[in-house]
Image (cartoon, rainbow, N blue to C red; front, side, top):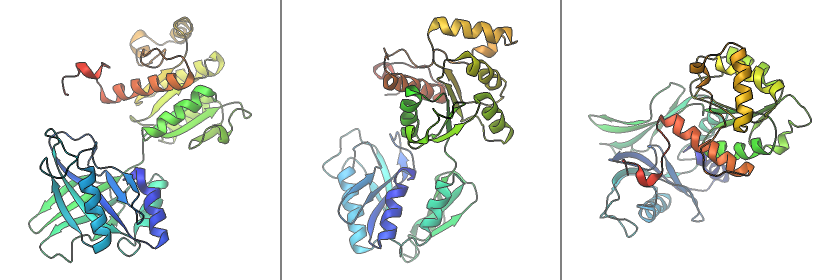
Length: 331
């Protein structure tokens, strides 16, 4: 639901009512995670999704009906449902409910916690012996997994929002701008850091936090503040040794880092490796550095390079070797 928070907040403030459908349980493979949501606004517009195309029309109709009637219901969708399904569509459970300031008065507080990157959890009663209880929400700051909890007399869907993973890009240039876009699409909170104040212009990197500071000093400070963890991705795009070598020296000493990459040609990387080895790093430690960063997909432009880096980041995060989809055994 994180991707449609702004749409939900806009609808809430309008005083009108839409329909909200939330994926609460799947049976077998699902292309989207539990907790994904679709909002149907009062004008019939669609925001978000609960599947990869299976059941979209049926879920749309169910959400629209919930908005019009006020009905809250846990519904199951399987290959016998609707016209937009195929035999290989799995079975999913979706909770549909009306959404408005009257139906969810606490939502602005939830949206604020999400925007501030603070943990917030929403408990929603999706089934109960008493129909009047269905749809009730409880908001808490307690950390919890996102899951369906089945109790003797009710089913409660728990949707937990934690701080998104971070992507810190060092160097403010066209590659950083393109990678900012890719990082945000993947759900990362993006920071661009450059020691040159004239280059570290927020207007050049929409949606990113922009910091004017020496890269190694900023990363050191973030690590000391506990703002770096195993989900954090760091990419150096400056290709300037006076910025890059001190930065990588700090990064390679961090115990937790999800991804570490650096742009540059193979020749530039050889020089980089020599400098880092002279600084005391062995081959095993240097193997943590993905450089030249990105998968070999023939990238030439900053946008293409950003896609290549994003693809490698995903593969590293999933701890799988990159391979063409046609060869993947899980298809």
